[in-house]
Length: 123
Image (cartoon, rainbow, N blue to C red; front, side, top):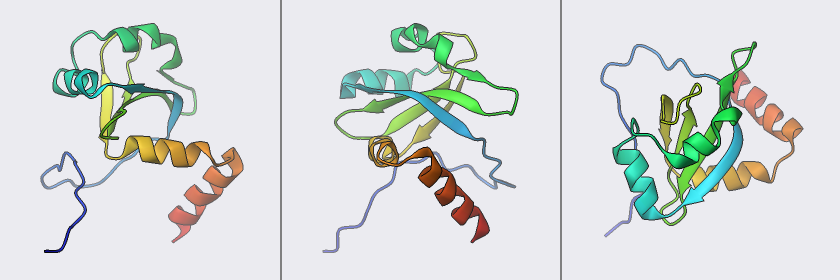
């Protein structure tokens, strides 16, 4: 039997577009599987990690969202958060394989990241 990749996602029905924002990961935090499930299942509850890092999350004058990435240290998925000054995940997106993406991007320079983005847009 063929083993196929599995990606966890929140598929939205009849999406007219995918209007994405530039999100800068100001800090990434690995948490236990249990703590990640608590955040994933209850994103509107106050969260100590979000509260402790509230000053890192904001939207700047160029419409860049500065975010906190909290990821499951065991499973690897994560949640990208911009709390807008609150202690809960006010703006958030589930990111499959966030740990892998973050670790890979952390190896790159800012110039390499920008070049990759430009190449992807041009294709």
